[in-house]
Length: 101
Image (tube, rainbow, N blue to C red; front, side, top):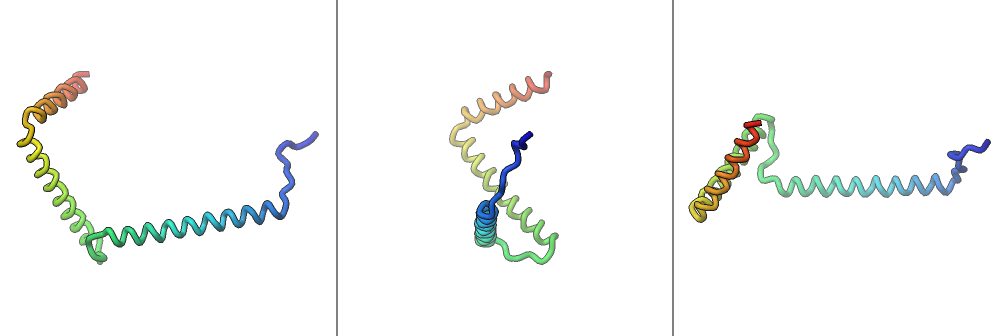
């Protein structure tokens, strides 16, 4: 009886696998290094010294984002009140149908 899964692995196959894995390791390392560099460039706050300070800075950024979104929403309501009212009615109907079930 022959074993269909038995294949003879040559030294060339093993070396090829090693070079392939080495190449993938280098690519992964390069990718992670680039990601770390991009993260450090895009962060607007300095290196934090405590978790509490990091949380406060994140909350501050979140508040700014929420304020800017609220301002843009107010502008959209002022610019197109009928369209926004129809969206609100549609959302209310959908929520009502979901809660009714």
